[in-house]
Image (cartoon, rainbow, N blue to C red; front, side, top):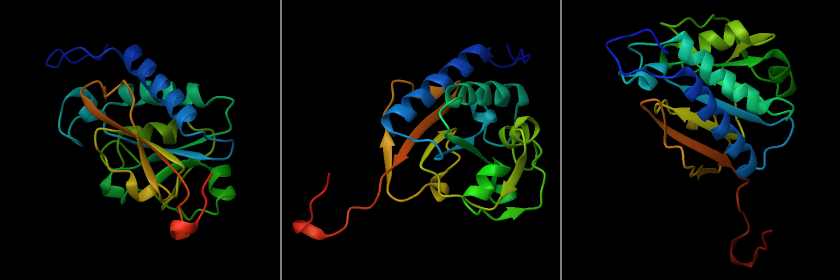
Length: 189
């Protein structure tokens, strides 16, 4: 449990399990393949029931990342963790992801008060983390309405899941699909 007697108790194991379930469902519904990317936007403050950016928690961030990374294990799908607005929503990724997609690296180290707890935790737990300016991910998980749309490929399609929140934070999940082009005579799969 989070050691904050002023707030409702939040079970870290529940958060981890919910994030695992959400990620597994997104992998399935989104039909994600090895080499593709899921972007995570996350306000641990919102998970705690506080206003975004006001009460970040590395413990909550770790539980969220643990659940997502456990679900991604062995899939070949990569994770990008969005920083907060103070770092212009840059993203923490593994170096090999940046190299594969020719992403622009930036020089900054996310910390809880400038980057957010999730990005700071990712920076400390990824194998070879770097920060990149932007990404066009194939799917996304937004915990606490952090607005990840700028980092998703067009066309974004909402994914409806039974889990609607993580802790106290609203949950939004999305996948992407290629644009439909060609008009009324076109044939689509």
